[in-house]
Length: 335
Image 1 (cartoon, one colour):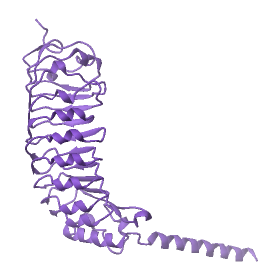
Image 2 (image 1 turned 90 degrees about the horizontal axis):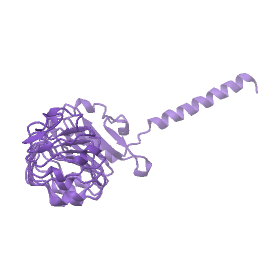
Image 3 (image 1 turned 30 degrees about the vertical axis):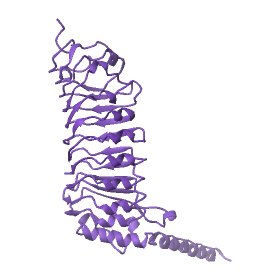
Image 4 (image 1 turned 120 degrees about the vertical axis):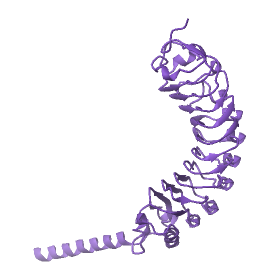
C-alpha cells in the first residue's frame, strides 16, 4: 500500500471520527417532557426576549437559564434561573412540572406579580428557592414546609404580607432564610429556635415584625442575623454568648431594651449594629478583647466610660453618640 493510499485512508478515518463527534454533540439530550414544560413556561411568561433561544430546533439543555443533570436523571432539568429580564407575568405554575429541579430562581424582575404557586410543592428535590426583587404579594406560604430538601430560601424585596409560618422550622436542611424587605407582620415564631443546620443565616429586616425575640433563638448558632428596621421589643441578649460563632448581628432601629453590660460577644464577631433602640447599661470591658470591624451603638441609653483597648477607639464618635451619659474617647472625656 503506497503513501498516497495511506494518507487517503487516514483522512477518511479522521473525517469519520469528526462526523461522529458532530452527531454526538448535536444529539438532543434534554428530557422530552421537560422540554415541553419549558415551552409552556416560556408561553406563560409571554415569550420574553431573554428566552429567545428556547427554540425546538436546539437541545433544551443548551437553552439560556437552563441546566440539565446527567444520565442518572435522564438529562432532566435541574436548574432554572431567570433574572434581570423584561417580563410582565406571574410565576408559571408549570415550574412544578420539572420533577428533578433542584434550583429555582426568579430575581430582579419587578413585573413578576401574584402569589407563590403551590405547584412548587411537587419539587421534592428542590434545594434552593430564590424569588427575590420581584413584586410578589400574598403570604409566605405554609406549604413551603413540604420542601424537605430545601436548604436556601430567599423571598426578599417583595410585597409579601401576613405572618411568618412557624412550619418553616420543620425543614431539616434549611440553613438560609431571607424574608427581608417585605410587609410581614406578627412575631418571630418561637419554633425558629429549632432549626437544625449550622451555621444559620436569618434575615428579617425592613418588615413590620413586633413583639419580643423568642428566647429559643438562643439555641441557634447563627452566622448572620439581621432583624433591623422592625418593631421588636424587649430582650435580645440571648442572641449573644462567648461560645457563639456569630459573625454579624444587626438589631438596629427597633425598640429593644436590655442591659448591654451583661452581653458577652465571641471572638468571631465582626459586625454589631444596635443603633436606635432603648438599650441601657455600659459597654462591656470584655469587648476590648475582640477585633470588631463594624460597631454602632448610637441612639440608645448607654452610660459610663467607653473601655480602652482593642478596636473600640478605632471607631469615630458616630459609633457612640446620642446616648444618655456615655463618655471617653472618641467622645468627650468623662468628668
